[in-house]
Length: 518
Image (cartoon, rainbow, N blue to C red; front, side):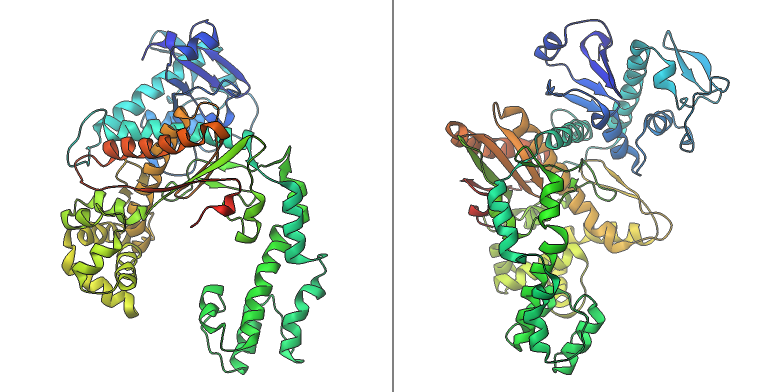
């Protein structure tokens, strides 16, 4: 990778390794090397191809620290120093030669905490290139897990996709999610009224008929239900749903909880704090601390269904929503190499052929697949899991191996190469699911990266687990639909090469997010 065709940046300073015009540089489609997209002022340039050292560091080495000191240490197989408390300390730095340049490193070879200030921009950029080369070499040493490898190594493709996701997060923060503010305020008011807590509690309190119950205390609510003959181990909403018809209190309680959640988390204060310029804005992370899913604040990943109608396209635009169908079971089929399970994944609905093979109905087949991935062993799930063991032994052996690794405290790697750290405690169920959920996250981000680069005037405005939401000019909506399908086919064709697994997406063009089914 030549230094004169790579854009580099850090903190509030940006540069290239050699003087040139930034517009011309991006037109040449280089792969920009960044210490971290989250701290790099590249907007509104929006380069298409990046290598984010912090993002790739997390893939290779796991953990939560991704600052330059930690990234440098890992790339050079050095112990990671403690966080720097601040303050420039020149006495413990030494200027040492590195590939013909002088860069500030400590006498033990670790990067000085103030290296970005000690080095001039070009030397700091060259330093980033050294780390990039070491990271890429480390990725290429990892085995390619695909049944039929071809093209660039999968681990390197993962680095590209994770880097693109980090850049996409910066763009999601800058662009925000389009919100119909008037409709949002109307919806909030419809759910919580004037915000008076006593008024919100009244329908439930009336049904309690003088019973002294703290509605915000799960133990108190459980005791009240028990006095009515409803014995439940906890009061989670999904558990109470089965008792909605058993007593009017349960229905009232579930309705109250929705209003309570909106009032306490998504009320008028939430709108005032997080909506600016007609867009809902929050902080984004390209990879959580576990298996690597994208995460967001400000309710972007947990917006209640009651408020989704407020997510609306701006005039002259449409929303295009795409949701990967049954992605985790399909990922399991691909990464485990189970040929029988891959045959099922060739269908639009994976659970139908699984049901036929197991000799059960579709709901039971779905329970069986979910039980396999999440390690459920009791009740109907346990029986379904035994059937899965017999019918799809390769897939189940893959999951058991991951679970055993976690149980004894061994780290695991996902299909794309992300290191999932377990630690000394050992959590088998976590690793059993992490190798599937983490791989699904990698496929999703690779898909999102391809879509991002093909959108033209459109924007990706939301990444929600397995779902992409695009905001595009109305005349480009059908082109965006074709792009989503084509990008998924190309991405899966490389990511799952040789597996025979088919990946599908449900795509809809709508004015409001709530108009999309699913």
